[in-house]
Image 1 (cartoon, helix red, strand yellow):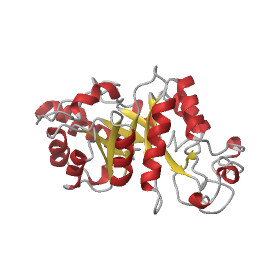
Image 2 (cartoon, rainbow, N blue to C red):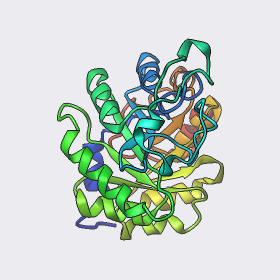
Image 3 (cartoon, rainbow, N blue to C red):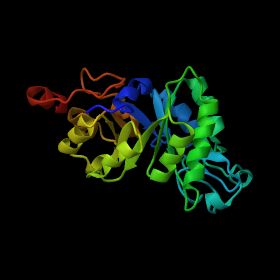
Image 4 (cartoon, one colour):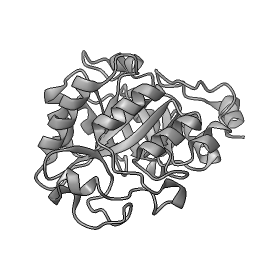
Amino acid sequence: MHRPDSAASRLGELDLPSVIGHRGAAGVAPENTLGGLRRASALGCRWVEFDVRLTADRELILFHDDRLERTTDSCGNVGALPSSAIRCCDAGAWFDASFAGERVPTLAEAIELLSELGLGANVELKSQRGNAIQTGMAAADLLARLWPQHLPRPLISSFSPDTLEAARYRAPTMARGLLLRGAGGRWRRAEALGCATVNADHRFLRPAVVAQIRNAGYSVLAYTVNEPARARELFAWGVCSVFSDVPHMILAQMPPGLPQSNATPPPLLAGSARREALM
């Protein structure tokens, strides 16, 4: 199937690798921190994924949850606090004492570090009630302004159609990915949103669903995959990339012949080739 604004026409610009560090490398470093991005690079990642949301004063920061408690030494609703208050939090000690003093970084700081490390990124946009459009517009504006030319073009993803539509309005040529928990038939919304990828929970993917999505012109990205055997199975089905908390473990057991970069979706395997890839 061909569309003038097709996903396939933009995948080459994305230069997607087979393994993407999830929230940096969340299994071995505090998630969504600069230390986590550095650790992902040291583990061999070419791309990382991290979460971005707005503070009360409209600062874009790297943070997953609505609230601070799980990953900092403070408490409160992220969207109700100014960035100055959030930046005082320790975002590393909860994970390990060696990361004590890690701060919640801004998106601008993360981009600067990505430039130094040579890392591409999937920027997942998190929004709270009432700020989905503002989040999409602010993130797209900042990425368009600050993204280094020497890095692979970024991928913006979100569960929120409103956020993706706002990002598309402000940066129409920037690649977008539709995030889904269960793929089902909901992946078809990707066309209306002009998305390049469908990013789905690996637990709900099946070979037939992966084939349907790929045949429609999208690459399938699967989260969060921490078992090498499961990664091999997903690659055999035609999944382009997996997000992993332990990317080094997946990279160490990549299927023979699978490229590190999947700028275009890998071919579906059948028969003996598929069985071999699963071994």
